[in-house]
Image 1 (tube, rainbow, N blue to C red):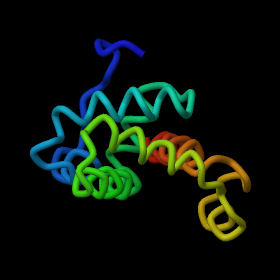
Image 2 (cartoon, one colour):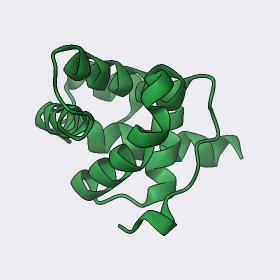
Image 3 (cartoon, rainbow, N blue to C red):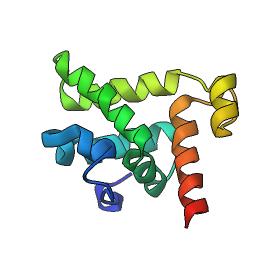
Length: 120
């Protein structure tokens, strides 16, 4: 994914952007690329995920990495790998309608896209 394809956040107050505070402008394109590459989902779907409450939780994970002394790119990569390593279990599948066994990050990126389409 090239940087000119990265959509801007639509939620500067909350979600990933709001949680990343002073790191937001540097972290946004790094997270967009890392998540899109890992999940094979389009940038618009990744933006929807990052702007959601799930994106806020992803940012919390990145912030934990920064707190532990990781560089921003390393913290984003570690969070992406961790979220891709988790799989959707029975309860999450039942609650959100995401297929069981799907990587957690992929499932929630797709889930957020579907929710946005349904709300439109």
